[in-house]
Image 1 (tube, rainbow, N blue to C red):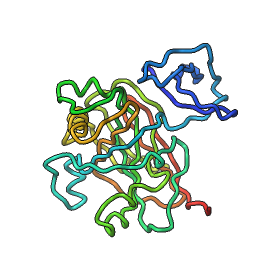
Image 2: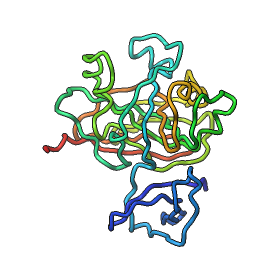
Image 3: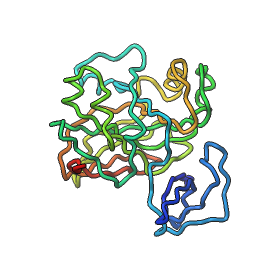
Length: 260
């Protein structure tokens, strides 16, 4: 079985990184795995922890219009260079956590994506060494308030609400270049998104090299690699499940944003 790395919280509010065992227990590490964390003697039983987002990035760097058909459905042309934006780390939530539908928006969309986990400090990284800077892979949902994105003509507000970046459920070290990404809404059998990750315009290693020419990437940072065609709205009460072959599935439900 492929090794799966998780970040968990115990009932005592202690947070650990660890490796998920076949019985769903967690072998606790003494540091994040990309920081060379080593196994400890502590093992958590399957009912003794809650899954968190699998890392705590200093930043989430995202890429727009990185699939040709998605660029077409959004009414634009393919960018000549990666189209970058940022999501705040406070947007990250775990699988099975609730996405909060903000009262400021009338159209909130799902966007299923492959996410990269940076494993090493990366500055001005040449393309040939970029693959070694990718420590692992997880699943992301780049939740977007589409009406606010159109209204603002820039993406910070539309992409930056708390809970607008589900990540997880865990991190794997390797993924097939042709892995399938599919997004499902509720119990519908047909996916609303379905594509191979090899359809990206700019491949993962190109993104790492390009971004590192602009900003320093730190261990544990997250890069969202773009979403394929088929994005669409969610409603309060919906469940969104994103599956990537070789990783697993990320599932979240949508609720009205709670009152403060």
